[in-house]
Length: 314
Image (cartoon, rainbow, N blue to C red; front, side, top):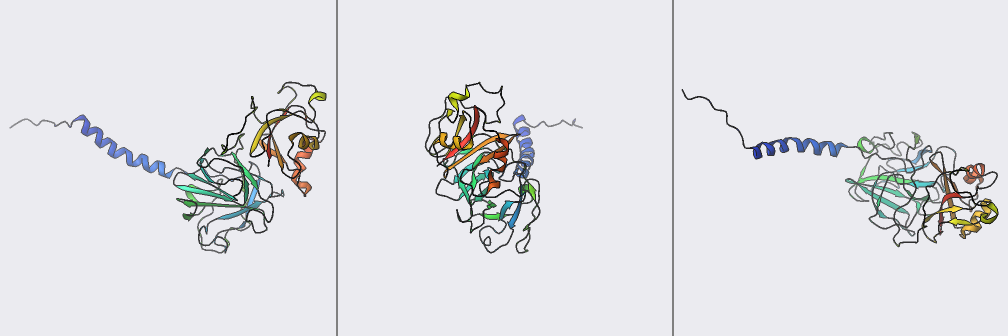
């Protein structure tokens, strides 16, 4: 009898077989990775759907879209809008009312906002400022300040997907349903979207400050001390651009002196500082006192000298 001999496969063949076995599982895991979708709003703010799934305004292109409004008593209009996911920007610009972000195989659509000017196809990170919620009657919102949020497979007008599974919204599920105006008013979702300093790249490069301080709520020892008498009411570092947003340092004074020093005018400026890891905004043209209530409380005795902040001036 001839002895049995074990036939060894060539190393290249073994490697090929291993790859054939492993790659499908790796691909499947990558496809199953959740998108990590968050509310397009500051962490801690609460939102609910004013209009839910399967409404007359959503049927057709995006039946699973949600029209989001503040549920924490603060005004929706003027609320900062943050990128709900990392990806590539499309659309937007000063003449548009929508921005969409291409992420993985889907597109996240954010509408009825005053968008910042940015370059098409710019890469952004979740939490970057995209703009603010437009006031009532502006940017196609039909008289209600809100954020239209939708996820579509493919492009901005692709197949509408529910906020469920891989696309759960800030940890809250909105399963698919045929019910008319589903989820209107509930559940209330609390944002965990961490705001970050910076914004998408502008279409036209603008001058930058020689130093770009991190935007934080100032403390007496966190920034150089400059005599208040020489800096009061002035922008002491950075350049306020006529379009888009700018990082600057204010020399201290009242909110009115800030507006005057920025040179934007009361009808076209918005200012932000951060405190406790979140943005606090100031809109000089706001007609409702509650819009600026947190800012007024934060700077009840005036804005300290050398306060870093973000300015948007149109």
